[in-house]
Amino acid sequence: MTTTAMQPHPLPTFTALRFLSEGWEEMRQTGFKGVLYGVLFVLMGYAIQFVYQHLWQMTMGLTAGFFLLGPFLCCGIYDLSRQRERGFLLNVSSSTMSWMRNWKSIAFFAAILTFFMIVWARVSVVLFALFGTHNYPDMKDMISQIVALQNIEFLLVWTGVGFVFASLVFAISVVSVPMMLDRGSDTMEAIGASAKALAANPGAMLIWAITIVVVIGGSLALFLPALAITAPLIGHATWRVYKNLLPPPR
Image (cartoon, rainbow, N blue to C red; front, top):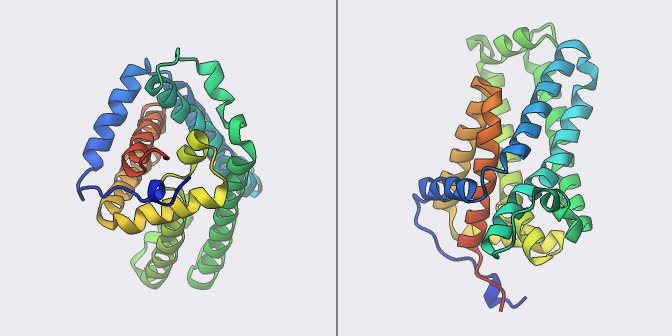
């Protein structure tokens, strides 16, 4: 791939709603087949909730598995968009194995995400131990301690550190998995393209990141089954972000 082909397109700042609209159109044109992957995200969310309530010691491992498996599930959503775009017959079965086209790079990227998650979880535990008076790991008590006004120092530090971790993850993942799936790029090339796309469009990417947090975070916090729709919606929209940001290779 040439350097020219890797120059990201400039995007208007407020394009997030357009991405969502295009993502919904992708869902419609693919016959809402991506909902299958959304259901899997819902099941994983319930599994994490169940494990935390009954076997909290295993929560870290299951959440790590969630981050490790996530990119592979997203590949299926991206591949449905890719199939439609290329005029192929839509095939859910084929999409489930699409990651195999570049499995080494995608698996390495999944491992990187998992590493970030584990480090962040450990840092959170340390921060909570330093600032909180608590009966950890009871979920209700932990949340009440986090949001209590007397723990404002903890909340500020925890939010600040979390923002740094989230920013790093977003910077390396804006277009990484779609690019690895679509172009067969290696992990570091895709990460570099994501960072370059973010640097070229900081305003648009900030709005897009906030949109993801609102849509997915709202589903997780308010009504977990909504992920069956919102997860594939963000997945298809992310494919549109990738296609809008990176011109085809020359």
